[in-house]
Every structure is written in structure tokens, then in C-alpha cells.
Image 1 (tube, helix red, strand yellow):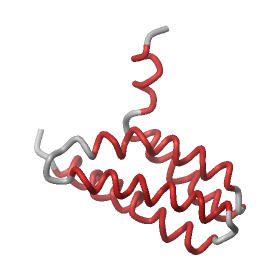
Image 2 (spheres, rainbow, N blue to C red; image 1 turned 60 degrees about the vertical axis):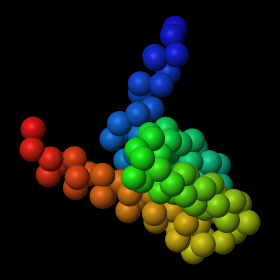
Image 3 (cartoon, rainbow, N blue to C red; image 1 turned 180 degrees about the horizontal axis):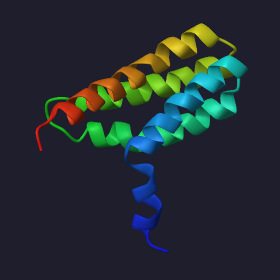
Length: 104
């Protein structure tokens, strides 16, 4: 087993969608554990975004917001957690629009 076998399934649209669904379910069920799993799934995408020079800090800021959302959910603050997870969903929508509008 190589590192590529571990990293490749964590990058792409499937982990992003799973993370968004897990963030929503974690908020509804007040489950900090599900929020932490969703945060782990969002890390590769946020770090990938932070590799682009013009939007470098947006990916890191979204990653910090996701971690803050997990912390808020562990403290029982559902609204704060949902508010802090919203930038990741917004980032996924913007990336999706840019990807699907790009001429191949």
C-alpha cells in the first residue's frame, strides 16, 4: 500500500459532498464526532485550494472555520457551527460553478 492509495480517494468531489452532508447531519444530531470526521474529509480540499496563489488564504481560512465549527458543536452551539461551516459549502459551490463552466 502506497501513500497514493490513501490520498487519491480523499481528493475530488465525493469527499467534498460527503463532508457537506456530514456537516449537516452533525449539526442536526449535535454530533461533534461526525463534525470531526467531516472536518478531516475537508482538509485535503482546503489545502488543495490553498495551493493557488490568488486564493491561497481562502482555503486556509475555510479550514480554520471548519475546525471552529467542530469546536462550536462540541460546545453545544449548533448555530455557530452551521455558520462556521457555511464557507466550505460556499467554496464547494464556487468551485463547482468554475469547473463546470470551464470550456474543455
